[in-house]
Length: 253
Image (cartoon, rainbow, N blue to C red; front, side, top):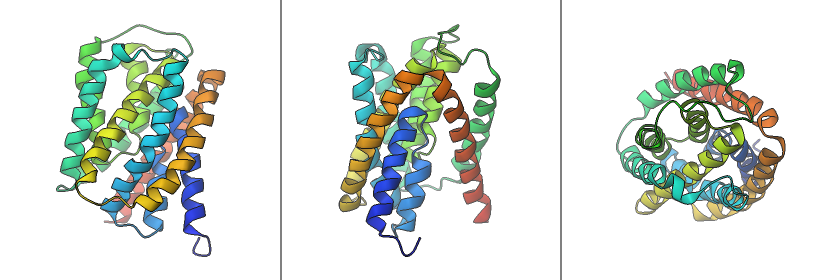
């Protein structure tokens, strides 16, 4: 890749990540390695990744809201908890080691991938709700929000899985609501990264253009194809993210 123009690589990476994120989450699996390849430090990479990702998640969220798949007032508590968790994660990541999360998240994603692949609950139809909305906000919203602010890859996937497994949402609704929470966590992390001065704005602006295009395409595909598209992409994204995180963890030992 050394002969390629970094600007072209980063734009294409953001374009692909925006589409994948809108469908199933996991776009950070694409953009974070691309930013590291471009020569950014790990902290610059995390900060710049949030600055560009907020545009893709924002575009997808706006599309889902316009189409009536997300009721903003109905997710207010989840948004508040997600924002709080992501803010805390973004503050702590600038001080702490993320080795614990790097070990925990792959295991969770692999387990959820198996659940999504085999469970009859995962479809275009709503199913039985297992917990209340406040409990969901305090567990998935706060917990996954913290993870997204602290590290990030796979957060959108975890949000979507939580909506299906715990609230019984069908895949279209789960993906739409997950993207709203993912936008919230991206925005919260971005606001707290701003103070650190670690964002490379020229690259963030370039990648934001790719994110907007990719997210527009991905969100339209979700509403058109539903579970037939989202289910396999969620499983593939979960396995890919898990493999990447495990590789990064053990190859560095």
